[in-house]
Length: 71
Length: 420
Image (cartoon, rainbow over all chains, first blue to last red; front, side, top):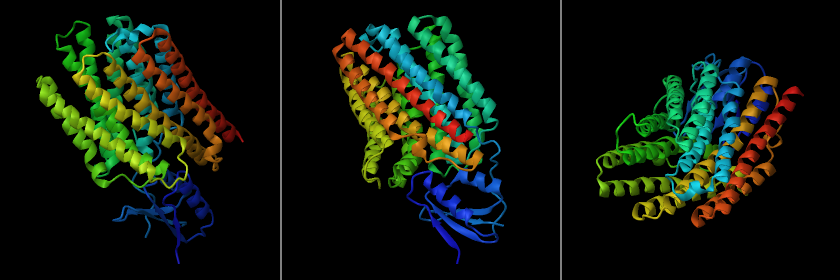
């Protein structure tokens, strides 16, 4: 089952720290689902730099979902 | 299937130094405003004295606009996902133009030397025009449906109108244009404080308040319609002012004041619903700011019915120093340590806790001094005593010096962490 990191309702940079910790433990070929209150533009820069693949979408209730794959 | 990356280019994300140069310059203008009060206390005799005009612009352009532009270089990419093209060189030119332009403007207004107003208008007009064009280029791919990017565009247009009216005023003061000065001045103040600064504050608050103060989101109806509605009423108000329709102007002023109070009251209500058990320093700064806005708007409405010189002065102090300066300072204490943390994480892979980069106690001392300076300014303006005005000026110098010292301390912590 895909791991979910729920980082809603936290003050920056705690969501960022949570996801970076989760990515450090993410095995190659696996992905995780990140839940946030808003689009994390600075995180995308780091995901690009470190070679992760990702896809984001905004749910009807405003929650931002991001699938991140460690290729 | 997850695609490679996404559509935005992050290569042009600004360096830490891009916004920082604005944040370090701005407190110097605030301190200069205090020093001017200290040296010439009679400038508070009315809002029309050359000294009062100089102090107003040292705060509004030198401090407020400088911080706002610096923050936008970072807010646009981090919050809106917009990348300002060639942000480094653009920031260098905008910063130089705004800094030298603000000095020329304050000196020209304070000394009555119109020779300084021409370079001021060229530099401030040119610097802001360059920023607005660069920001719109950055925002062109961002959907207008999102509240903050859409309202940032409205604020940029508001600033452009305010600066154009300011240039018109400067030319009229220099005898180059024959215009009804009071009419143009009212429009300039309305667009600068509400169309530019007020809408920008709201656009930033839609994101900053829920994100950093852990509150529920603003009501969707407010974020969707407040800025556009305020801009539309401001346009109609401008027509009433220009057409000298006194009763329509008064009614529309009341509507605009109502919209501002609505924003302030909802912000305070959201802060009461924060998940924090104890309000943090930024929340305190916002509380001082929102309370001052409400009190300042009451003074604006009273000033329209009273001939007494003190009401516009109190309104100006409450809205500029109590309102905008408080909120801007509160945001700076979040933005600067967050950027330090972000750049450390990107550059060296790890960063200390944000509270280590920016502890609470220096902020608490600064906000206390800021509140005392605000109270001293209000009492001094009300009583009109020269020594009280000097004391208030000294407190204003001290509060901006402390703000600069606190910013430099964060940079010291950043450098030490970077070198470790």
